[in-house]
Length: 337
Image (cartoon, rainbow, N blue to C red; front, side):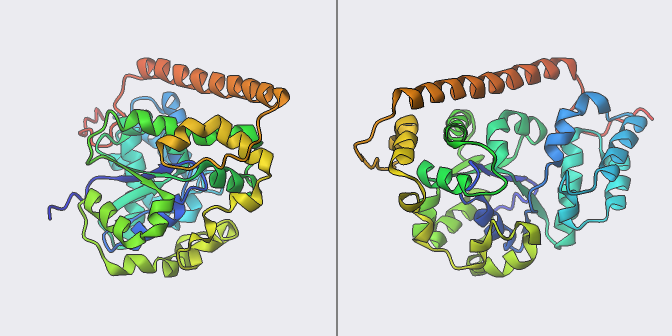
């Protein structure tokens, strides 16, 4: 089997869809290191106009100092347990693009764990795959999809999730929509889609398929990811991921029947019904319907949600024109200093 260990791996999907479990399983692989999720790529990408041309020494110094001064809980870089001064030095010597700087950070994490290949897990990336692929054109994407009723029910139970039912539903719907768009444009060896329920039903089969997709060997210890959870998940996050210390179980499938009201389940199904059918999820047919007030609330929320999404997307495309410098992590060094 040919090893393609230089290709980065990104695990994406709607929040509370099983991305953390898949991350831990892959992190258990002897060749792959995938850290706790951080916010650093998002923050660097949004500030790229400030840092400008990273072939210039003064700009690499500027971004290195930004990372050093933001090595904290806000970026979550501190969760990686790395020496920030090593990152600082490496950025100054080889951080010639935003993508390259992201790669430097994740490569340091892989080195810490004596592994060759790095990846990243952040559900949020599903909505920004086009931008992510600008940074990492050869990235391999693993998209996890979960029954929207379970995903929404789980989100609403999280203390860190501040959005209401309608926004939570739209969040799932948008993640699936973005995935369906990008998979039409990526080859089969770059995009892998997996239903959480199928994975739970036969984890070894699907782990083998993921390894095949990544062109990596399957190792039986990947099924024993629970021991990895003890050290690979920051303590303050364990309350949200306590199930990762237990064996995989179907107990989390269909929990919406207890966690959502009949009307809430009806609203989820009415809004995501087409996507549910497309992905093989059975509608409950509970007989309820959305009221006029609920439908109006949904329309208002959707207008706000997609209005903001299209504004951000449009602004980003304008910035792509304004920002002419390389972002690709594989760009050749072309320093002028």
